[in-house]
Image (cartoon, rainbow, N blue to C red; front, top):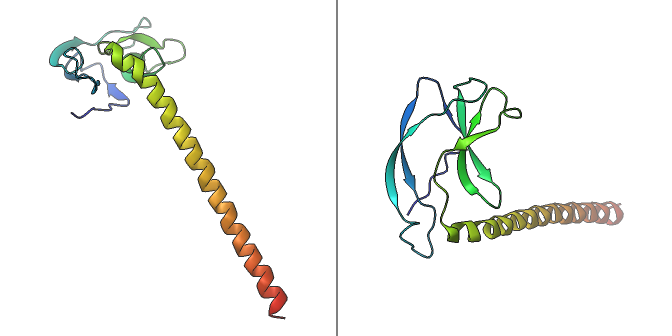
Length: 138
């Protein structure tokens, strides 16, 4: 089962109604509520400031991981969250997702540290060979 990452999907005021296929992100355990596929007709909301140019943004909080919401494009700091775009995830996904995200972040951090350490070792080797060449080839 594939999961789709929409990132930021910009919608203009001309797109008042959109048809979206919502696919549940839960893979294990295969609960019926998680692995549903349904089509819904969404009505695009209007921001309190009157703006119709909205973006679909993905939340990465522990309570709503990978849940998409409407956000105002005019001024995100003032308006921010307008409403949820999709349904909440199943309880199993909400329970597992934050741990997976933390684990992925730790792995990325350790990869960056290992890459930096490898560069330092390469420079040390080049420097030592340079000193060797200068000292013994005089």
